[in-house]
Image (cartoon, rainbow, N blue to C red):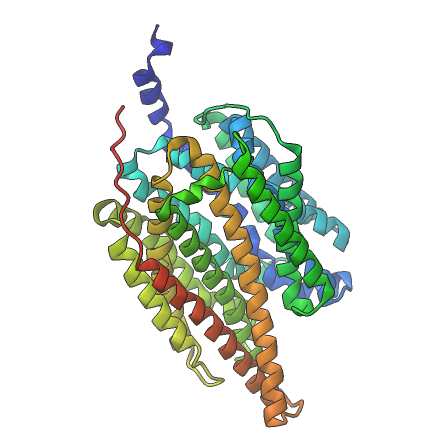
Length: 482
């Protein structure tokens, strides 16, 4: 019978590749937009709900913590539930979160909204990566992953700009209502076109692995998120950090002795997967650290409005969006090395210039440097990630995507936390050495010194990435056949 013909099934599936990708891209763009969209509204929300900085920060910490717990489990969920069910579930959580956020009248309800949004994004992103690996042959994955990388990284870059515009013209509630509208469209569209593409194996759930994963990744992300606020010598940072490390060591040891692990860490036996994971970890740290430091510089040092600062950073986000598909196609033709190494060199050079910014640096210079930084990162991220995943056997795709997305959560939390810590220390040292007074100009000088120090940390991270990038080589894979 035709239904048993694998060639025909593949042809029928391929006819709907574009609608499947459209469904994922719309949902994923809004999901990742939510990662940074609320950052520019935090000051406004502190006044509206009459809470302090430590409390309002939970809107970010709670979001990261939820993702840190759920993303590692995504590989298991992909193997237990169909693509269609997971997609609808993920988008539904995001819609509920957006609706709750749009109606929120107090801080507690808004925090619940953020947790629902985080659940949706945590389920969606690994599912999207896994689906791309299944529905596209290896020789076309570069272009496909270029589109995925576009939404995965460009959305957080333009999030502050869009949010600043919404706050200036409407209200902070519209950050959530905008998400609600687009996610609802993604749900309706996806419900009509999403297909089940992954193989359902329903592996046994190991309760101890589940507990160790939840405690380990949850504690680690919590510790990193709180370190920027409380300092690395605080017990609220040290204790969860130690608990997280111990739990993760036990988790890895248990996975290595299990026949069907929760996450197959044996994926790290593949050298290019290791290189790829490290490079996207570093890329994520660079992007989120820069997206934290640059708005702070523009608003608190230069004195720009939230909307103006967002517009200054918009060209970089647009450059990233435009180049992602181009880099994807170049990867299919050239392989990773000719893209990754030049991209890392460009990033290192740009970040060195960022360590030299002053209170009088021209805005045109900031815009130019940010654009070139985005060019450098887009040349690194997608080629490295696709090349690393290509080295894995198909049965390890869910594990590979789960590992990479988990590392991205840790990278985001650690990058922002360490940048804040370094910046704060830099401000304190400057004020102590120069005996700075409390006038506005002196505070701007001190903050600039702290931001310079923080960019020096980011520069160091990029330099380490350049050393790692020298080891990248193209994975030789057989072309898929229908």
